Structure formats: structure tokens, C-alpha cells
Image (cartoon, rainbow, N blue to C red):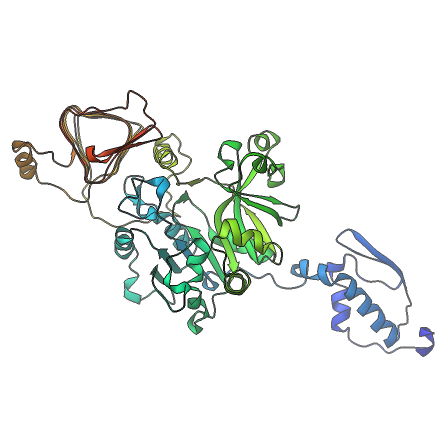
Length: 525
């Protein structure tokens, strides 16, 4: 009998570590003597007779029994008795993916990488994730590039020069171009997002990066503003091995994204990359669990991945190198496969986010910047979007009509009309020009008044838009030269057309005037 080993009295001694743990708020009510019910997280575990006078054997039996019952729950509730771990930006590095060939954004990607595509009049797409990292305190940033990376490399070197390594602590911003390495796989181009990261995993095994405990994977062609430290803190608090940032979407956009299903704890239980038909309908969920109203949940019955992933470094290395060395894509392969063996959690992002993946989405996202009020704007003094400092003079406007538009710096506008449009840096609009629903990216250089006069005298077309030209529903790429009395309106509502010899393409009904192209006087498109 257990009680027989106890003497008539027991001496008082300081409480042991087990006593402290058992009496903590983690277990609900403190463990009491006599008839006691031990409860945790509103779940009754068992009813136990605990003698007031406990011998060592009783105590050992009780302690080991309870700890065995609640071992898993203890990890989930450890925050109640242990100090909360705070997200430290010094322990995370970000990898920004430069994208593939960018076929859906062609012809804007004909001579540049997707992240180098100009946006908003004076920015480039790469400025968005770069600025989000800097504003979040993340100063270890890699950019992976492969296709048409010259202009992207130049922009990064000009914009994010960290003082040549001075006064930036242990931070860095480095471009990692696709290159040949040892081994058979090292002779191939990047085969996908995961393969691109795999080919540079050796960087994170270097001793100087031993403090990098988490790796943030970002895309270079999204428009949003996000505090990655909130994402990181949620990743830590949930005990996740992998966290996926997500948001609710409607049916019209759902098939463009990886869709996921989650349980009540935010655990991802199913993941399908860009499903169609019946597979798409099978991914419908009640998005009220994300905090949406019943009305909004009905409009957006899908949960979409934003393509933003946070991995524990050791987990990422194991997945890419040892578990799935042939898997090349994060969305369609790594994330669904990882759910079998790792804790993969969803993080809800409840602000504006746009995937700039197609000409139509790119065009709409740009013109949406002119809305009143816009869903996204670049004017946030606390979390600015950085870009290259160009030291251009203010824009000069002479007797113009400008409505719901953005005019960048260094422009010349003379007696023209600009409506619901964006006019990029160093743009020139001559007398009588009408611009409506148009994105004009601007120019890399100026021409003097004398050079412009000389061009006109020789019958050439100078940079910018010539007299009495009417342009509507159009993207004008950089350094385009559009002559006098030109009409670009696509009155026949052509959806798709390839006319590179004439200096333009049509995509989704939007006319795209090519970079460095010349549209002669009197042309009608």
C-alpha cells in the first residue's frame, strides 16, 4: 500500500520545479489536496484522490502520470509559464525571387525582368518587397535573378547601395544571378522557385550566417505594404515550421492562385495550385473563420496563397536538399508535400494586395492608384516605398487640364488634357495632346529644346507625345516616341494583336507601345 511508507508527519521543504509547474495557470486551477479535479484548456483530464500527506512514491507517480497526459498540450501552452519569444529581424533573411521569363507580362518583359517593370510613375516592382523588408527591419536580403536582369541589377545597385558595407551592421543586399555550379544539377538554369533557392542553399550553411534561423521567401511582382515582423511573430507564436501568408479571394480570381483549406487552429490541411473546374469548387470554404462578415464571406469563398512563405532554416534545407530534391516549385510541390511531416500554418493578411502577373492586372493596378481614395498609395511617411533618387526638377505644367491623375517629376506638359492616367518621369506632352486611361512610363533621358527642334526639322519624332495626339486605354513603355496627330484608341476593340514592326502589341484590349519604339505622325491604331 502506497500510504504505508509515509510516516506520521512530513517535514516542510521548498517546492520543487515539478510542483511549480503543476501549480501554474497552465493547468487551469492549482493542484489542490483532497478531492481534486485537474483541468486544462477547458478539458477534464481525470478525477484523482490525492492524500494530504504525500510520500515520495506517490509524488513521483502523480507527477509522471500528469506530465505524460499533457506533454503535447504543454508545448502549445508554454507561453503561459515561459517568457514570450519576440521576433528578431536579425534572425531572418529574405529571398526575393526575380521571376521567370515573364510571358504573361510580355511585351513589358521583352527586355527586362518582371521586378524591373516600372510602376506608379517613378517606381519599379522590386521596390515594393525591398521597401517592405527595410521598413520591417530586415537587412539581410538576397535577390535571385535569371532572365533579362541587366536593368534590375542596375536599379538595385543605384537605389540600395548600403554605403559599401559601412554603417549597416551585419546587413547586406546581394543579387544572386543564375550560374553554373558543381554537379549535374548545377549546370541547369533555375527550374522553378524552389529550385532557384535550392541552388543557393549553401549560403545558409556558411558559419557567418549561423544566426539566420528563418528564411522569408518573397515575390518580386506584387503590390502591397506589409510588416513582415507581424508575420514573423505569428510564425513564432504558432510554433510553425512553415507559414504561408494568405487572403480571401472571389471565384473570378481564385483559379489564378494556390488555394488552401485550414482547420480551426490555422493549420493548412489541403493545398492546390491554381485549380480549375471541379477541383476549384472543392476548395470553397467558409471564410468567416478569417473574420469576414457573412456577406463578404459569400463574395470571397476561397483562401488564396500570396506566394509569401516563411521557413525555419533547418526545415527549408531538409525539404529542398534531402526530402524532395526533385521538387522545383514551392506552391505546387514543396508546400503540399511538407504538410505531411511539418507544421504548416496560414497567416491572414487583411490589407490590399495585388498580383501583377498579367498586362490586365498590371494596367488596372496602376490606374487604381489614381482613385479617390486609392486602395494602395505610395504616400506613407512611416512606411515609405523607396526608389532610385534621380534629383529631377519639379514638373512644369502650362495651361493644362489634369483630372484624377498622377504626374511624376521632371515632366513638361503644354496645353494638354490628362484624365485618369499616370505620367512617368521626364515625360513630354505637347500642345493639344489628350491622354485618358493611360499609363505612360516616361523616359530615361531628356532632349534639349534645340535637339527637339532639330528632330522636328528633319522629320524625326522626338521622345514623348507630339501635338494633337489622342491616346486612350494604353500603356506607353519607356523612351517611346509618338508623333503628331496620332490616334491610339483601339476602336475596333481588338483583344490580341502582335505588331512589333509597327511598335505595338495589344493584350486584353490594351494597346502596349513598345520601349524605344517610334509611332510615326498620323498613325491610327
